[in-house]
Image: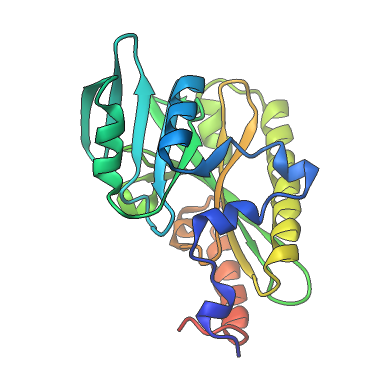
Length: 253
């Protein structure tokens, strides 16, 4: 049986690099880099919004969102938000990060449901020799939070329900579901090329206002209680059954 350190990739930068190599996957990756003074200057100059995320972190904690305004930057972290002058933005960012390693990523203009940002968790599992698609479920941000994470107050919502609520027609919903599913298989296969022991992959997807899909990040030890709220009531039982098979091969310790 494999120990957790043999299959779980904690480092988000390594996980990002693990997605590079497939043309199908790469075109869905937003620009992402390690945070340095140089990359911060470049990204703030090039993009209207960026996210600053810890390399080692989970549940959406310690993420900072920085949006450019005409004369300042608007900063959001946890439940706090404030304006920072352009001359002080670098100091503000690096005071937040301290000596810890962080990523910087271009912000995506997410579709919104009732004014609330939404993204999606796609779950892929490999209980045997092949990857299996477990489903997709949406996560809506609550209050003034930067992230949609279920553990951080995010509210679950079905893919179809969320898209119908913003006026998508059934043909577009079927198309995006099919595209997401295909992207899930491509992502899992590409990631497995670099990380052979991966059998569980949570893929966080975003849809922008132009209806393009983006891969925000992947997780090799995904939280799957979210699927208790899936519209298919048997979906969680299937996920749990497959996870029990995987745990016979991979220890959670």
